[in-house]
Picture 1 (cartoon, rainbow, N blue to C red):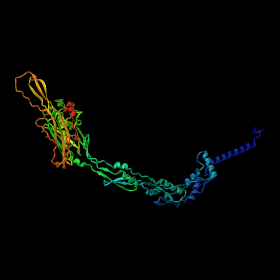
Picture 2: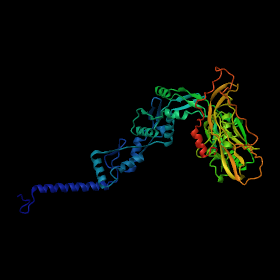
Picture 3: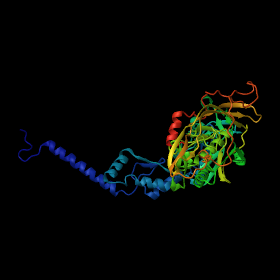
Length: 595
């Protein structure tokens, strides 16, 4: 075991270590005192090649002024803006000045700022390596701003690709151009650093690129393309408003994409395809509802007060209805439910082969009158059903029965213009007009008919005590049944047959004759009088003559080469399905004239 000391004596190595430690502590103490006690610039500090060690701040300013005062008196720096411009920039022009006061202040600060260890470190660094202080240079801000503004004039703003429409028939694609912008703040710092470091070699400035935006051809197509739209009416709460026409615009999108990709820097012209609308705004404004397409009137008896009220009410409900081209009219939807609360009365209707009272009786005269007007105006009939028994206010094959919720009368506006239904009831007549715009090609419609078969009616007796025994009275006159086909023949303004087809196939059931037989007390014998009872829906003296029945439509004397032949009897009608016997029976059981 080694002994540290013996007999009161320290080993030699311990004495040496203690001496070294003592010396280091002494040196550290001296350095500390030196660092904090020294008020001037530490020896080893210089600036701009001038040694400033041991000087006060004022002495350093004087030394720097005498050495650097003429440093920037006659120097210039060449600034090159890419390959566009070269510019000699003098220190005098920029107001470059050497700041001896700031430089002396920075020199004093070396070793005199910061915490204890930082200051000791700085002093040691200065003692062993020296310290070169950057000289301070100032630039006149106004002069610098003017120089930067001069150079910024060469900036180019980015121009995004765009398109224009030339003379409404050519799409012009304009190319994109990238922008270039000078970073003036960075350039000014570079110029200042060059003067500071006395580096007067040419300074090249580059502009940064501002990328422009290319065309999105799909978006261009969406903006340019327009579907052709005729001027039409828009139905609003405030009435009908004319919506202006739109000219259709189109172009070959795929071809445009290819051309744009192949020649991105060139102006490209692409032809536009324009489609003119059939109905122009001005034409519609001037001619709207000025032309009568069709007019039909039918007579009704004012003696049937309830029925007359229903006819007038239903006419008022369809009056003023407007249909745009292609729009479908629904009688049931327009007239609505037939209820007492809505003003409808009980009047005669067909039910189970007899005439009985029912709510809304008589409104089928309105639907039938409208049907005849729609056919005359050459509209497309989409739903129509004949009555179970023919009525006397409309020619056979030209009636249209309705039952709310089951049987409707519907037609489409096949004209290129809006139409308006004008329905009025006056002087015992209901008059329906379809008002529109005069068509480019006027058409006239005539109907031809053929009866295929008839069915005789039967007689049914009903006993009544209201008549004397044995007396007979006709309560309901019988009607024969019949099956018929109606053709629609369309002629141009010169009378040439241009179209002929089956308008409808109607089948009417025979209406039984009902005879009352008396069972009451006998009276004195008198000659029985059998009054003539008219069929249901008799409308008075204004009874239209039945349409002529022909074996085949003969609408024109033109030869087959001049006009189309009428449709054969068994041709399926284009505008209305034939009414089957089952449908007629169902209509009868539900009330075929039910209204």
